[in-house]
Image: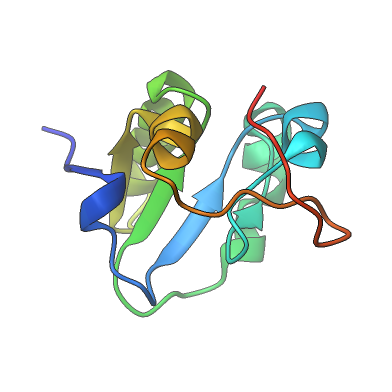
Length: 107
């Protein structure tokens, strides 16, 4: 069974992996997130390295992140799906920024 957490329970120093596509990321993302789109994840998965503790996987609503988290768990990396995704993140009042550091939006 896939481990899940909500945005309010994420540890401040947790490894947050955003698997949304480039246009979604460009519109706005969590300031501390690492971006590897789901569409290229298998080819780029080595970029996550060997994180201390679980990888918290987030997308727009929680479906794509569940798929990537399951894949990571099946391949020896502890991963947790962030339920509600970036929509829940923004609704909780957490910061959403662009790469330039401006206020972003979740699309």
